[in-house]
Image (cartoon, rainbow, N blue to C red; front, side, top):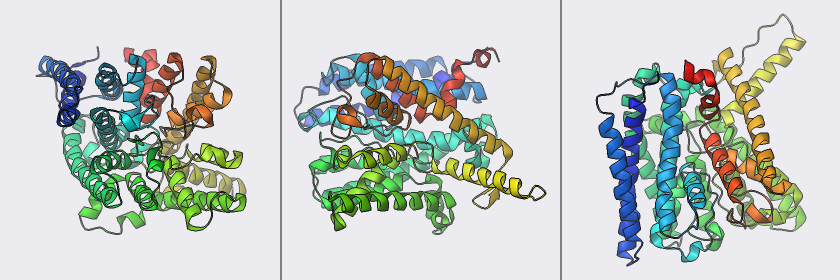
Length: 482
């Protein structure tokens, strides 16, 4: 029988924390003399009460947590927090239905950035702050999960990044608390720096703070319907490019930097590959724009860099409608939205390290075909790659393709056209935000989609954010009988 007490204990603590966070937009609305502060205050009290009730009912539970409990906890936390994070969005009237509210909250916590809210330029300040807070908390939670939980669960080859602190499941809770404390300080520092630079570049202070929160979290929620394109500022765009990249690098390397290892980032092959891929795609889009007469010179480089970085890191900001650049650019953006950033970051997608592992494994296979008696060992960051890691990465790719296809078929069955269904499935499972086409493209929103499609997309966002296997394993009957 699965002991739910450790799971409910963690869920209760995080739910109570979410309730405390709801007081921030309440205070913002109160200062702005907006009556929505009562809604956020009521939502906060309800969320904190239920969170504390779960915590009190689970006190005295074992401090250890097994594999099955870790799987259940990871999924349950994201679902429960999204369910309660949706309440102020619904009760404030920002969205008409709970389906829309849950979609928006799930998009926030998974740092996807897809939105159903229209009229952001005139939305209440508390609602805008709450959306930014959801993404900021989600980004922080993703880092902790990627460092403390997924390596221990051996999801998709993440055991490559397994730290000694997590060599046993029983160490998850105390060690995750320590890591979350360090990461929170780093996250706050990066967010504060980004906010100051945005403000110096011309953003209003509140816009600068909210955009900094969603930039570092590579989330993409904006306070404007036109996203960062509203500001039409080269300085703001380049600041966003820099911090989207910063949010997509392994956060463990920032700890090494603080410990006096400045070359840690340069030595990491994952980081070098990430920037190499960005450079290649930016150059392709820049040259395409020049050849097509869309943008030229430094301006063309700015639009190419901003949109390539935004899509590949899964941030989802837009400063132009790249759908209007033609089928070649739209097709290329569709491909790069699957790639994502580095492991242990706030970014999404397949992740660069998995591409490296597959490439190394493919090279080993070709070499063995040519030299049957040779000994070839695939390596990552100079270290041999275990066969279990290769198998886990290959399984992840297979599940990723199957999941993408399944989501696309399900969305098509809800009545969406082929382009919207395909790009919707891709942007959900890759946690990017905007898709392709006139409906959900960079210039559109997800508001007009039907409710079944929004629930499918919400599941897709959860599936992609939690690295597939963490969710899919719960559908195996044997998991519950073990």
